[in-house]
Image 1 (cartoon, one colour):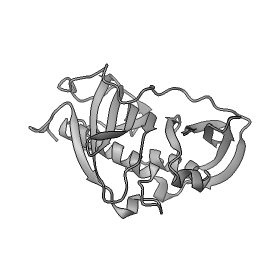
Image 2 (cartoon, rainbow, N blue to C red):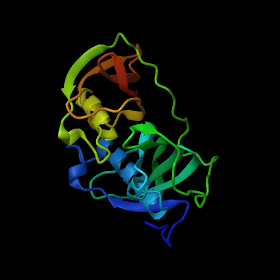
Image 3 (cartoon, rainbow, N blue to C red):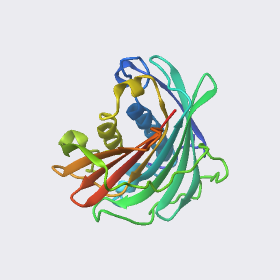
Length: 248
């Protein structure tokens, strides 16, 4: 699709929280929060002419490599939230995108994401084939107080679950959707901590893609003062994903 006449380098999009996106306490699920952020990023790439459909002409897609989310509060059922997004950096095969969520003009979520251009035929990163110079970049306008980082993995962590990748886990790029990794790990968190909204922030590293019928193991560990929980997902001897949860 061509660049939209309504294109702007900073995009704001409103979403209404529906009941399918909520936990039993009526507040937005962390997984659906991530979906909403990513759908806003996709909307911005669409009006800017670098969407999935635009990139598929060159067998390319954006894939998420790292993501950090900082949460002050979660929206609840029927809230209308505004998600604002812009790009911090974009060059060759890499991009850093910022996102913020607001309710009634108050910021409640900040997010920083790191994306790579991925060739969906060759299954490897490569330089973006589409023009992107029309995007104004905002390197100093950060959405989070801390940037994303490489998560330190404790290889002696307890194995808590074994999982087979099913068709329902896959996305349009034919690998496990990034939110699925988060969902698998959160299923092994004390539900009381989730329902009480005790997650202050979380960070995810996506290292290797998973495909249909892959067999994986989910590992968990917690630090001594119980303020941080770390998960990893492995296939054989290789770590595919890491999640770090920080508790309030």
